[in-house]
Length: 419
Image (cartoon, rainbow, N blue to C red; front, side, top):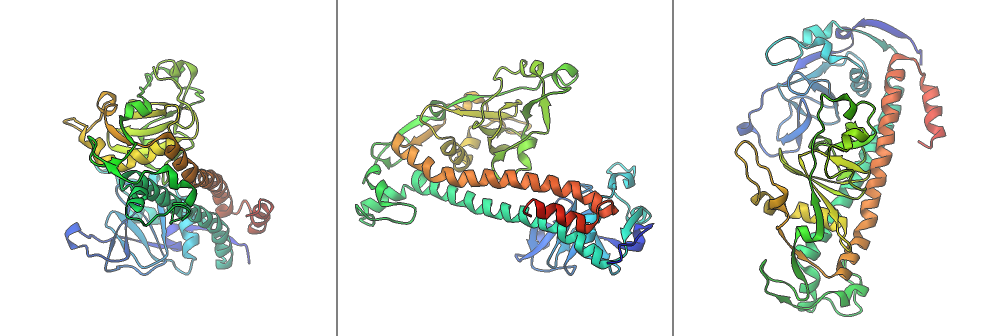
């Protein structure tokens, strides 16, 4: 690899083009990703651009860059690379992430990016395509591992949700015994033989319809201490400057791919924490956004204080926080039915606490936790690793793109860390 770099206009490196309109009524079921300024938002039967491709926002979400392997349809809120001019597409996707798009935003009522202005941006790029590919490979290896973790966690989450539905919504173990499909000493998928005696063999009437014999119906307030939060005055620097306590808002949950909260955008001080009556909630608290929208969910893996947009559930003795998490997702429609509001729906703590929950005996609650805890633990492990990988990628990206760090040095750095 020559390792030569040149300074030039962005328009000499790539040509950007505006995406294409695709009204909702014209979309047909298919497998072609529709890419908006915020990423893949839908799928269609027809592609407008051959992959691999690179897309960024023109209006709406600005500054994000998306690499698309397959043929795709970029929407008219985006700019896509029509001509890579011999440069490596994946390298270009990383290269553009280092560009200050906001410096090229026009002053219109709805801010947007003019591609002609963007083409004039002065940039420094490696001229050797081999060097470009090597840089893209290093950064791509980190991104691929992050994506692998996401997919693994997605599978584990689906398994945990399916287990909850089977045991606590459909009552499959009970029905299997009733129908003679599960015999003592026999194992079924998701039902090892040693659980046989935990489940009854008939259903009985309750206020929520038929439930397994020996189970109960309780309010969610009986299963968890339900609390809310608030926002310390933002104009008071003593509540915010140098804060060390995690303070969570629904925005912190909106970008999570998994229901695991590891960090928050903002922190508060001891003085700020003293302004919140619920104080610092312990690790393991289940967080449910209570408005705009209702339904973001996560388990706090760090102690947190919450703002007024949450219902926080601290499990009572003998109650699994994983049971609460899965219940809140499965009962989303029921929770919404207790919400009210003219501007936007909101559910209050007073309306939430009485919601009725089919509740198993403690041994079954414990068995569910024992089954699902390892799955959740792996999801947390993946999230922690992905956070580390993303930080490493973000640190290496500008240094590799600018030539401050050479490929061999970066490869050695990653190899020392087992990557």
